[in-house]
Length: 530
Image (cartoon, rainbow, N blue to C red; front, top):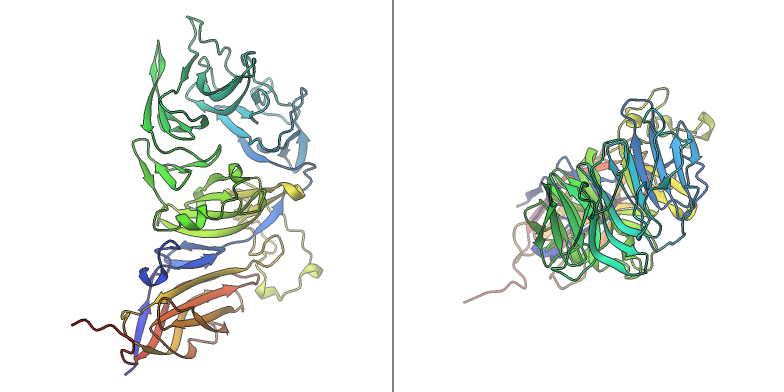
C-alpha cells in the first residue's frame, strides 16, 4: 500500500554540516550554496549588479555618511593611497593632502561621533572628514589628520566613537614600541567637532589611558554595545563602562578565554554583537558570550578560511533581511569570496558565494538600468527588469560589495544574476529515512512544493543509499516546471534518500516542502536485537 510522507517548513532549520545527514531533523539541509532561509522556505539568493561606476582605484573599505537633513547622502571609498566620496552621481577625490601610507596588509576601520567621521588604516595617524562652515559634509573638503591627536602616538589599530568620547586601542609609540594592550580616550567633545585634547595628565580634562593587562593579547577591535563599549582582544573581551569623573571609565573582563579573530569581524544587531572568534562565532549580549556554530556549521567555516588572508574576514548586518554576513577568504583566496549568513530571527545559517571582496557596507545605492529594448535577449514576461517605473528598492538600504581587483562596487538584491552572469544556486539533503531508518522503501514519486519566477524550470535530482556509509546514488536531473508538473516519477529503492534542487538561470525559486510517495519493501539488512 502506498503512502505519502510529507516534509514541510523546509526553511526553518537551515544548513547543518557538522552532523551526519542521517542524524539531522527532517527540515534541515546538509549542503548548499547561494541560498537563504526565509518565510518557511529555502530560496535562491538574490543577485547583484554594479553601481556607482567610475572609481579609479581599488576600494578596500566602504562607509556611508547621511546629512541631518536630505541634502546629502555620501558613499566613501577608502583605498591604500586614495579616498573618494560619491554624491550626486560623481566621485570626488577627498584624499588627505598629507597623503596615505600604502600597506595592503592593514585594514581600515571607520567610526562616527555625531557628525564627525573618523577613520584609521592602522599605519598612519587617524584622520577625519572636516565639515564646512555650516557643519555639513562637502565633497570639496578633504580628510585631515585628526585634530589634537597626540604626537607621541604614530597610529592606532582600532578606533570608536562612544558617547562624547573617541576611544582608540593598540597604539604605536613614537619610539617604535607597540602598546598593543593600551586603550586611550579623548576629552569630551560635541557632535560636530573632534576632541580638543587627548592629554591624560590634564587635571581639567577628561582624557585618559588604561592598560588591559589581565590577558596577554592585543586590543584588536573596539565597538559600542548599548551603554558600554566592548574592547575585543585576540584572547579575551573587556567591557568599558562610563562612570564619570574622576576616572571616567571602568574596565572589567567579560570573558578571559574568548577573543576576536581580526578587526571588523564584528557586527551589531538587536541582540548584541555577533563576532568571529578563533574557533567559533559568538553572540555577545554585554553580559555573556554564546557560541553559535557548534554542531551546526562550524567545521564548514573554519576548515575553509585561508591561513594567510584570514585577517580580511569581516562581518556586517543586513537589517532589511534580519541577516548577519560573515565574509571570509577561502583557501588560496586573497579577499573574501564566500559568506556565512545567519538569519538572527529564525536562527538559520546559509552559504553565499561572493566576488573577491575587500569590504561591504549596508546603505542606499541606486541601481540605474542601462538596458535598452534592443539589449534585451529574453522574452518580456521572463525579464526581472521593471520598465517605466521608479523602484522602491532604490530608496531603501541594501548591502554594497567592494571588489578591489576590478575597482567595482555592486549592490546586492539587484536582479538575479552575478552582475550579468548566471548564478549557480543549489541546496541538497541526503540521509533522509522518511520516518523509518531500518526498513527498505520503494519510492514511486516525489512532489516538490516549489515556486519559480516566469516560465523557468529548476533541476531536481533524487538519490538513495542502502546504508549511511554508502555513497549517494543520484538520478537525474529532471527539469521541473511547477506550472506544468506536480510530481517527479522515480523508481528508487533504498533505506535513505536524498534530494537536490539547483538552478543556473536569471530567476528566483522557493521550496517550501517535499512529499514522498512510497511503499514498504521489507527490512533487508536491518538489525535484530534479542
